[in-house]
Amino acid sequence: MIERIRRYWTIIRRPSVHFSLGALTLGGFIGGIVFWGAFNTAMEFTNTEAFCTGCHEMRDNVFVELKNTIHYTNRSGVRAMCSNCHVPHEWTVKMARKMQASKEVWAKLFGTVDTAEKFQAHRLELARHEWARFKANDSLECRNCHNYEYMDFTRQSVRAQNMHSTYLANKEKTCIDCHKGIAHRLPYIPPGEAPTDTPGQVVPGADSRVLAPSPVSIAADAAR
Amino acid sequence: MTIRGVLWSLGLVASFAWADPPPTVVDPMRGPVPIPDTTRPPLLRNAVNDDVRRPRNFDKQPPTIPHRVDGYQVDKNFNKCLDCHARAKTDFSQAIPVSATHYIDRSGKVLDHVSTRRYFCMQCHVAQDPVQPLVGNSFRNTDALTPKVTGTTPSKP
Image (cartoon, rainbow over all chains, first blue to last red; front, top):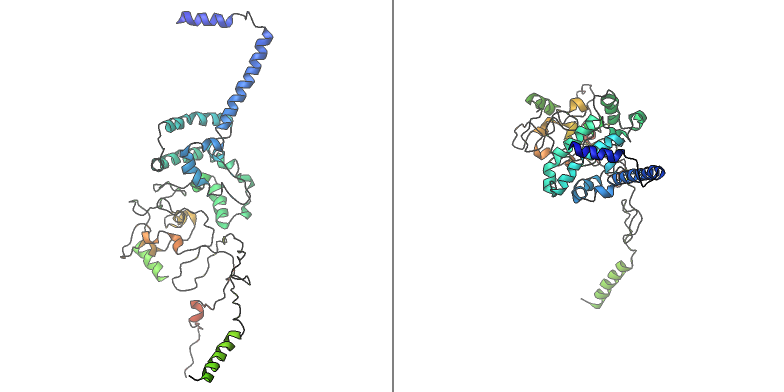
């Protein structure tokens, strides 16, 4: 083993016999540019909508749902595509996310979510990953476009003003806390994890607890 | 029947046939556009979004929704309305809580969640568009029909 390393080391250290210094330098320089360009182009290609919707898992489930939302079609025609929200824009974080995404390739190869039913079964787990990511980076991908500094509250509805000037302004909540499910349909969310992060969301038939009106409040309502 | 009778009846029919054609019906929804032609539909508007509660027009009328509800998800997984209007959420959202009657099922049992028959909010509560009624009507709400309470004692006859 040591012997082999030593042999390679001498090969690397030995000056070139056939190539000139200029050829090696220039060749290395050009090769570097070509490699880097190709690498980045390939990575940018994995950020395109064509790439994302190339798999039926994305095209038939989440992409269909996106098409009904304001992030796909709206009055001014400015729209978000998959990578705008789901891939960090900054290079280092993007690389980390891309490496993480290799697990998604694995899931694709083994057909983890290759039917609508399987997708629905995994939906809450997948959504939780994204919610956790948004929560951790303070909804950075939202804020890449929706900058709090430039929000004109006077152009917002009264409800939006009230929420943004309190919970968002004092950083108690971040975008994703309230705006879950704006680009996709929501799965059933267990109480306590609903968009407003407070218990109370209840599905008919699900045996979960919610604050119930007391008989007293019912009587008060009836009297009103 | 005599010949004269026949002529009379024929004349009567002819007089009806030659009378003015019935006046063209002007439908306020269509305007003066002839029936076979396609009308130009009114522009789509955004729903009212002013968050001002509207008075009810009759007893037990479901209150209207004073805000936009475009794309609200209301299905077996999630109810966007209840995300703010559920009684447990109103502390946070400052929305108007769902009436306690909505927590009672049809057999009168009080549930700990919204009754399934009340689950689909927009079956009864609807958002409003800022448009004038196309067809006039003479509806008067309950307030107009109930006698006004003047506060003075009625004079004896």
